[in-house]
Length: 100
Image 1 (cartoon, rainbow, N blue to C red):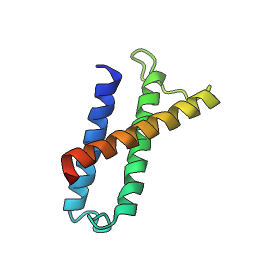
Image 2: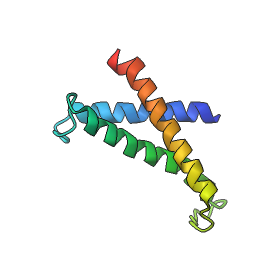
Image 3: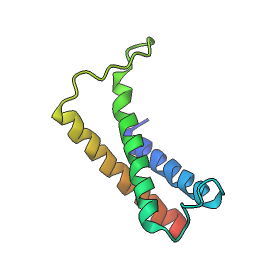
Image 4: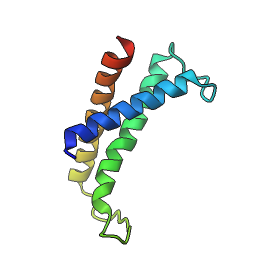
């Protein structure tokens, strides 16, 4: 699967999760009229999806070992870029599929 389809799929899933949380009684503080809080949750979820993209490079064969060594400034910049990309795709999906 190529990177753009993975990013769009992750963004769509995050938007769907946020919409489900808004509709449920689990998160009464996450309702339609709380835009700032919704953005904070979206950015946190974007960070989670961005870190997942970086973490997949850490798995070694079938041993399922994760090593956090070698964290360089370039890795941090890549994480921030992926987080910005995830946030932008979430916003695009939200504005085109939900907000209309």
